[in-house]
Length: 83
Image 1 (cartoon, rainbow, N blue to C red):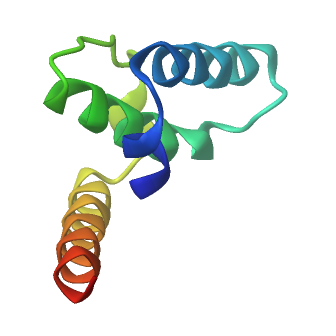
Image 2 (tube, rainbow, N blue to C red; image 1 turned 45 degrees about the vertical axis):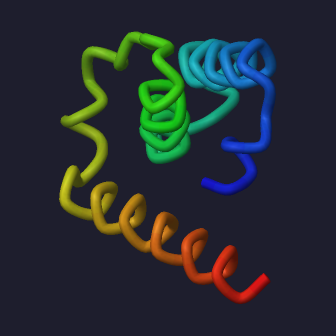
């Protein structure tokens, strides 16, 4: 998640749409929806509203995504406290 937090808003949004387009074209698998979930989470914290793909929750395990987001946040807090 740290990678996405460092991106400027415009680049974060472009990255989101590029992943969505590549999933729709079949270039990327729906496993990339985990990345989409993280991007949406970062965007929401910045006050940016991005649409969730209609089948997002069919593809990902919401609990697994929540666990990933929590672990990323804890890792970010820990590394900032160490620095």
